[in-house]
Image 1 (cartoon, rainbow, N blue to C red):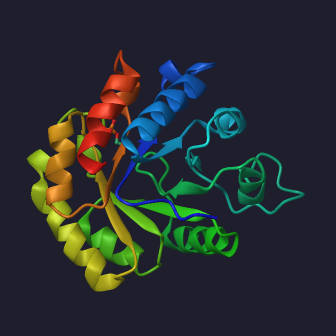
Image 2: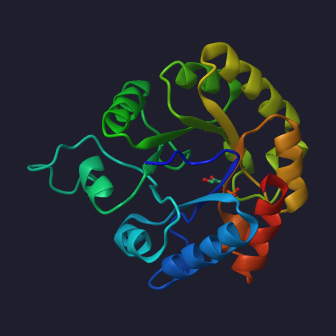
Length: 226
Ligand code: G3P
């Protein structure tokens, strides 16, 4: 399967009310329109119950927001990676600030996804955590200071050193891992600043999901990376 191009705009839908019901597919379709128009790499992460609908409704890469280590079969209630892959998802977020995992579980999840040729996008809260998780060799790693998540204050503008220190820490730990950043990203300028600081992509949620013109906002954020 074709590798997902970098730099990428990764849109985490979280569980915002705006993406309940038909919203998830609508948002994914808006992202697909922009991706085609700008030839930009965009990944969408819908809520778990909408994964199948979004995978079937768009040709963009779709990631789960989280997967568990439950095996196919007797693992009631677990989000099983094999099931996620079977419906067409290409990868998963791991260790998001809102779904923290112990290092051992991050490691096992990365290995499990890799063995299934799925993309792992782990999150980290600090440059030190970037260093520790990069050693576990996720495909992508996104640094997000938790206090800026959902704040509208972009990490690339108000804490640029978090991005630059993470770029250095990531490179030092594992040159193959692609370092993204997120938290508070709301404008094209925020994205531009992040790319200038060395990020290979953006992880974003509220700046898009809570907006009233999804297509326009996605285009604004994707443009600096296209
Ligand atoms: O997963 C993306 C995220 O946590 C950043 O959220 O709302 O600040 O873009 P937001």
